[in-house]
Image (cartoon, rainbow, N blue to C red):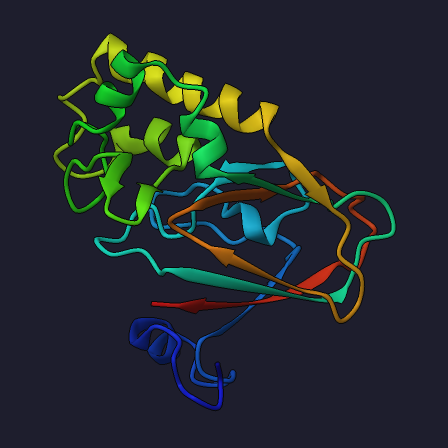
Length: 201
């Protein structure tokens, strides 16, 4: 990906000292904060709930590559759940609620679920949705009850169908970002866990 320069252009510009499109994902003391003062979980050793990358972007990257450089000695298990398994556990009213463009992002409300000719696509990050009160222009628009219930249903279905991968040095996990949720368990604060991530638009 670095040689082909297929990482997102905005990411390449933000990290001129690294190979194009590559991010270092590890605990940083202290954790990096976003523009609203919230911890970026990829810079902590905290539990990272199942999500899709770049929930906040108009067009999230289609693929995420995670290369394990140094695994954690204790914890840091990668968690994965496929969208088809999740949607298969949702009833019709819940799917309908998820397909409504009511879920806040910094660039305006979006839907979580979309049905396409290729199957179901999803953008999902419960933590970012719950933090959305900080987004400009969102504070005065609370989510409908059915939308909140739908978020919980996605999380619970994802956890029921979650697969676990203990990546070792040299392992590379390729994730189709619009079709797969991923996360990780917490790991010891003394661990020197290091992952490299490439997002492909």
